[in-house]
Image 1 (cartoon, rainbow, N blue to C red):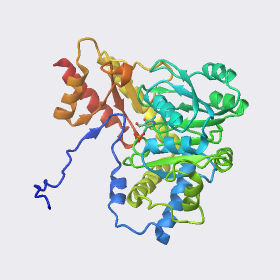
Image 2: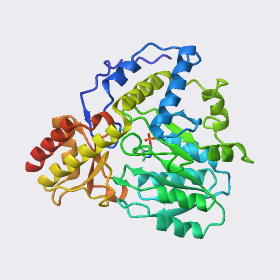
Image 3: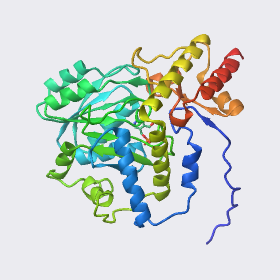
Length: 376
Ligand SMILES: Cc1ncc(COP(=O)(O)O)c(C=O)c1O
């Protein structure tokens, strides 16, 4: 029987200001690019766009590696891509855990059959090279060491150069989560010797969620191609995907064409602005927010000296109900900010200043709204 449902009205989203942990506001030019008519995913004009996306992604990741392209799916798909391709059952891996996303990576790695050594720091603190060095001493043959560069759940930025050096000295690959860091603060793949990285489109690239830019170094590719066991995910197998994104153009899956239009425009905007200028803009607006928060008696609670520019973990003052404030920001001011997760639930607000959303005007707007609500 064909059911007789009431067809809902056309969806009409309110004009929110997205100042949470992501998605961030999408640049209008990106939205316009995504409204363009479809072409086929093997059409020569789309193939040309794929090449341009790869070239621009290499520029944004600061790498020469050919194996740099967007995986279809959100940041978590990029995380799974790295894990399924690099891990064979029984492999030992070391993962830094200082928030939600390190915790998630352990889960993903375990599902791939890895023996995971967790290197844990309190949420809001960074992972230190000493912790990694201590963990590596206890492992005979580590496959990779992984850390989350910008922990979006806590607002801490872990410096990774020395951790990468330690990983390589132990014969391991170095894997980086750059979902929130990419295009909001320095990420230098080749200089830091990063072997595998994944990011997301909905943070500092300011495109909608839906693609996960990844890059594998020649060392990571060697590990993926010389595996003894088949990659257990067909969809994320780099050996198959590299024929689709490489010169052969062998059909693998239908790329989300419109998302690629959006990423293409988002990358163009990043490069037009200039990476350094973009990083600087994120830093300046973070400092401006920090100053304004201090004037309201609020402070950023992640580790001093390692606070993210694109995600600010703001301590909720005693006697204030964090949910009430967040709800009113949304209802009365159309502003979305994020809540704390895990041990930080109820204790912090997460204010994102990412990509197109990192502007002086947005800092002033959110501070003014917070001032009014806290006064109430
Ligand atoms: C640091 C980090 N890693 C991974 C992810 C997962 O990405 P997604 O939600 O796009 O799957 C996120 C999402 O917020 C993130 O912030």
